[in-house]
Image (cartoon, rainbow, N blue to C red; front, side, top):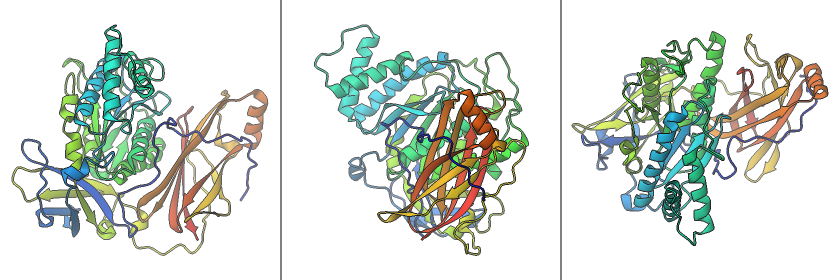
Length: 516
């Protein structure tokens, strides 16, 4: 295998602000490969039911009953003492949301934060930037007292009143972020919505899943956007190209955006995103912003929102005006979730990548919020064990794919884990940067799966405006990016997804890896 000499010595660009508590582990699967799901059971009034027994639950995969284990919810007195349990993450998608709608949503988000602070429940507020990053406004690790004081200070300044004196540095810094958030300035700018490649929003979901992965139990993600730029075939668990045409100037609809090859590549990102939220027990609550009833609902967008909710155990919202009141009880509901565990062989009968699942309870009038399926992991299906540590890194690229190779370096000890460095090489045929462009903006996402569990994820990349000499060198010789991943001994499938943010092209490579 030809090894390209690294031409770019660029540091990894992690898609989070350094203040975010980034996590690379998952809590939804046991070492034996069991599948675990969080299930909230609500009565007819929307209150969580906590007194169900194991024999009250029935779980079916493809209509076939499956044996399951049920862990009762943590008692309320215990759950409130665990930092982050029941966390609600609110994300304002500035990439896909018009400022006219953002302005009202931002003020309403502040009121929601105030309610969470009053009840001392964990909440994080972020914006999803046009650069595809999650930028934190408030994080759950900040105390409710600090949040309440900061909100009061920011509100006073919004009303042009003098803020309270003698604020602590923490309160002042938090209030400054909130004020910038309200006004759409600083780190939270207001910009026109952008018609972006659909993979951006999917990566945003995965970022949020990684953010909450170390927090036990069910969590909620409220994702606020003017649109969700893709179509979904829920029964098969597939993402599709949008087909609905724009109805008026400024509508954020993406007609016929994707080629068949792009859809095929995006399916990998889709499975990684939805699988990541399930692994982190993160329920999606997609919200479409609607200031007035005159804003027409697009059936395809509503279907995408509904599918996102069904596949992760959340609820879609598309009401007019302030929608945050519907989420007042989310922390309490998540803290009342049951943990359901089924054996890994539950997916052996699946003939496609997506395995439909149905969870019911023996309680009249009860409603269950839980994932309605899961992606079948090839590593959980009986197969011959790999006899070699590393397979060929060849691909069969289509006209829209990015060809690349991966070389592993010898493993090094890292405590109980092994640190394995790797080199991702792009030859001249990769087409990065594209003809006529000197902009390099490429992201590499790496995830190691074992027994269906996402054991570790690394996201890095390179971004630069290349001078002519360096551009010619890359076009003639290619370039390489270096990074590493730390894993415990075992057998893994390592998935590499490369995204050229300039052209929107993707490249995907899956490699078996044996860590000794």
